[in-house]
Length: 258
Image 1: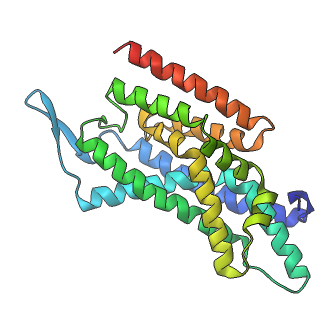
Image 2: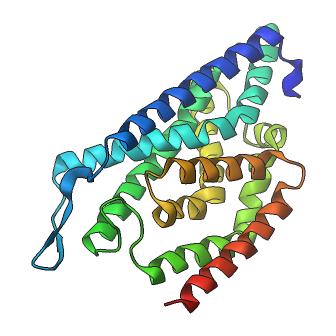
Image 3: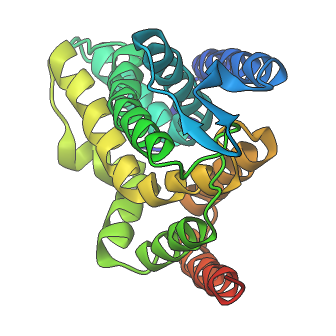
């Protein structure tokens, strides 16, 4: 079923809800970035070297919240086509006397998967910080580590796993027909499964946040746009592989300068 079969009012409501969620997330990120000169003082210079301070529980919660909000701001826009398809199917089912869970349940499952990823990203950031591989502004301060991020992301763009996950993300109708489950729990699980495919598609790209800056808003916006275009433009798959080659080349250039 095509998204265009939804009445204009329903499409507008979905666009408005997802856009509002995205705008709120970006407003929070902008607010955080504006006040983040030396985040949480988790590392400091002492005796001419880098002195690592352990994270407190509040630090971990703060960073987890940042990652969770960031994932909403980055990934919810890419879920619009799938959400429209789900809404169209749900509307048809309601017209046939078998109402389905609202679209909000589906998107909640999708966000839940990216929230789980946010926990893993927070743990990764904690480990990198303790290993002194990140600057206080959450950017890689190791050329070797930064080059590795670029090369790994580029290589992953070429893998069958990446292509398989991307095909699911680029084919909303096929995903819905193949993974359909009834009921509220089924809608939430479908959202989780769609989020899992998106995670399988984008996890390496998310690692590049440690290369360009976890709170570099232009870098975040650039990765978001790349992910969106990869999913929706006609030659997104081929473009993603070309971009992967460019990432590998950039990583090798960084290595050559060490």
